[in-house]
Length: 554
Image 1 (tube, helix red, strand yellow):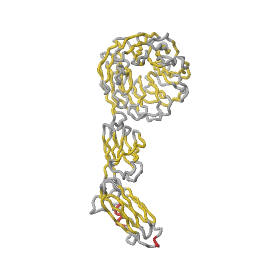
Image 2 (spheres, helix red, strand yellow):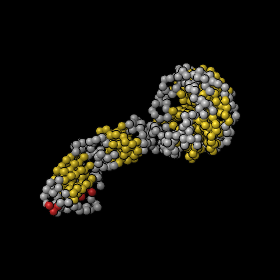
Image 3 (cartoon, one colour):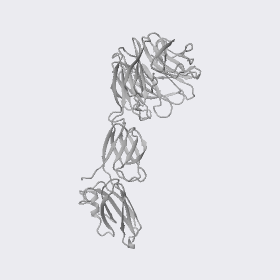
């Protein structure tokens, strides 16, 4: 049957999700030295994120971001010979970004104070444990000053230096950990207002949880087994319950262990994600702008990063693997180009560079639109991929509200008075797609009864040809004929047989009135009405789109 399709064109703006979950492009920036780690931070207060990367033979190198994903070399920081972890913070309360950099070769944490223009001065060298492998900053004693912590792999402890607020620090205190603590994060797990710690112990294959007392003290609360060789970890709400959860990269087992928070010091194991070879650093961020937490992890022996789309319930899609530099070791993620998508930076040991993996909106894919009838004011649902970036919608040129939105589904509420829809426009920013959908007109009918009239109202929302059939009984059409031929097969002995057609205006409804014979015997009789769209007045019953049918009682 040759139906007359009505086009639904959908033009998008930044979308993210087609055959793949993420669209990323890796760009290398040479360092001239192997690199263990890189930190994303705005060093010159211009509102754009910059990169501070370690140089294993010559300190650190600053790259200044332009806010569009581009980087230019900035200051060289000749500090240390084995910086393996960098954390940014405000050490002296001047509002400028400062740095804490852990040197695994010289067993110290450097404090560098920034001038707000991209330059730094070394102000302190904090001596603590043996092999400080991960450093973080937070106000552990709630005095308003930021403190520095490091997880010391070979001495098996955490070192805490309390900040004095002027760029100097008090004498170190230490807290024993498991075997080879390699990953460290600070978070309020039990929601008591005091910061707690989670530590990944590479040598004992476990995660230790410490309760903070708000005065700088930490007491061990729980231990949880992980996969082999846990190193990197991060904390975020992966299941949407408002509680912090934990993800740990297991270097020896090529997995990521997931733990759900409970609002107490207890964690619940939530399965694992498979990675490629030897994952180390990871980040929990929103890579596609759908408001849900995703996972990015570097695989040091596969020269890749793996990206996992979060479903918002603690589960994730299969990993999408993207090339990185040779032997990636460090990873950080944040939005470098202000598009609402987290970008990923990896530092690489063998290729002597950092790679910037820009997350771009993926081309939108449309799988379907429903309903295919133009009944108004029903909701319109678009299904597909990368729909989370739609910012506005219009049905036949009239604005439609976005009632519900996700990466794979968009529900629209047509504006009041909007006729049935034909052309649907969705707006984001960078991609477009179209979908052909066959529609039928909306049909309403009422009657004043025997001796009165039947009133009908048709709406389509676009110019076109309509046809209408009305009768008290309907004969079955031969199966080889289109459904809209039923109008020719109304029982000729009916008390009322009407076949009508005409031209739809662009948007106004079509109103028709038909007389009903005055026969008391027909009170309570059911009348059947069909409406459809056609291609030509010459054969209005031969070629049609889907029909719509209602019944009324005399």
